[in-house]
Image (cartoon, rainbow, N blue to C red):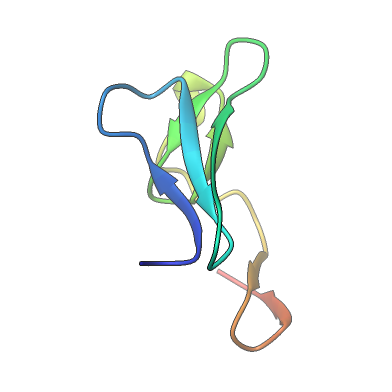
Length: 65
């Protein structure tokens, strides 16, 4: 499988998080929805907007948009 956060197949109110051995289903908090572009929960009017530096798991550092 793929490690890290992934979109749910049945909606946008949460996401799946895999760590190589385990799978967790998480909910987005307080009115936010899953933004698959940014791989994070976001306010509906901010979906798909690059919000700032993102963390690159492979490099272990922040990446500027």
